[in-house]
Length: 321
Image 1 (cartoon, helix red, strand yellow):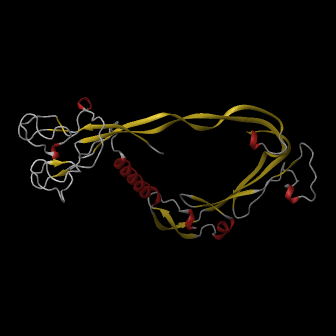
Image 2: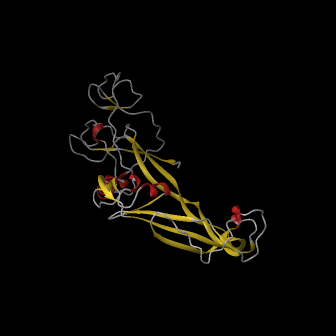
């Protein structure tokens, strides 16, 4: 996000006299103490309070002051010789600047605490839930559950956004509803910074970023009917052993369309079987694992198997089967 920067002008730094103790002398216009005549010590410059600020009208920044190598007095960037003692300023170093805090609300630095809490949480999760060890476990039983969905062809209610309605949607009734949000510019958030120019002045800068607010974006939400196959019931069975049994009572004999010859449109109310599914579970003394058919048939009841288990709970790590 770009930041808008606006200069609010140049202001005098202030300094305190080392010799007589006079305070609040102006850094640019008072190079000597008004009480005792002592030269300004640039290391003692500081920012004034907002109430003490004195603006420098028409100031043109030429560069940082330099220490006179002989008498240490601050001289302007364009000076060739010290106005205090006459010494040449060749190779003179810049005066020290003053860092100013950003004038804004101070926030407590909480990120070290957040990082520490995250590290502690990750360690606790590893210790209690992830840490494993090897153990010999006995297969207690094989359990299975079979499901045959029952589908019916007819008109069924659905809802969707207007641009997402499927082909063949009938009798749509739409109303306005919030779908998302958008960000709208809503003024600016600004803070003030003060930068020591090291020539007895500081520049006050106003830095602003655009604020945004969220506004709802409305769209058409539609209720409609669609003529197609929908699940209306299911036939379930469960048991133990390695032979899975499928329910037959009350289950239509018509199989899914992809298993039927031709492409005839069924009559309304026609029922058929949906895609079959099964849940296969290997049971141990204190835990169970849902597995695929190959893994399920790999082990026999009563067989001892070396597996990974959770170090704390003793539960089997199913991926080690």
